[in-house]
Image 1: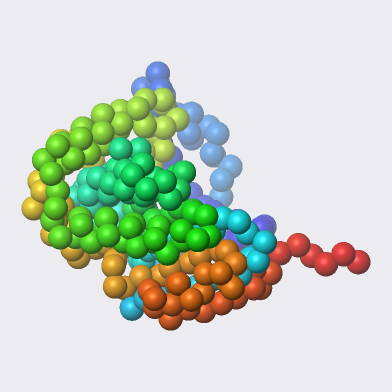
Image 2: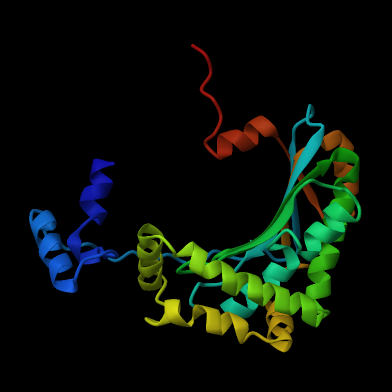
Length: 273
């Protein structure tokens, strides 16, 4: 940790956001006072390669024989935060699975009772982010849960977007945004994100306007390009003996024991001495 701090933490690659009852001059003066001892030094630039997206269907079944319910995740590599497609994708994802009145909740939970909770998420970063669906289901219903969820992705990709659903999604995102930045702490974090992700300096002031400007044709276009359907990573944690045959109808399945998966993730407990 010390070596990492010495190598990466320096004034030259830091950004300070100050929000509160203080003038710019006062903020600068206090920053000079409190950070005067922070030694300036060169920090090498780090360039991260974009992660490679999944091509085709890739299914990982983590075998947990004693599980009575299975955890389900599926998705693929997503977009950068500064991508022009971000706002149409954010609105489309809200329709799909970004709220309690979304298609996924309605079709998978309310109509069929296949799960208690399901959501889709768009996580956009400085480089590529991710899109994924997260849910769980009783073991006999795992295949149906995945298929119904994929049907909703297919539905949005096909452009089936009622005006009421679009209006509701835009209003939800636009109305939620002020709540996300209402405290000084939250606003400072948002200002830092604008800098970190290379967004327009007026991003915060324009957010609601840009959300409300999203039209159905833009959602359809972006969903068709950005929401994975045939190129998909699917991960299921549950009893392989019960699930493997069903999951093979979706694509090739790799089975791994749960202990092996935990060790790969660095989560396995050390053996007792």
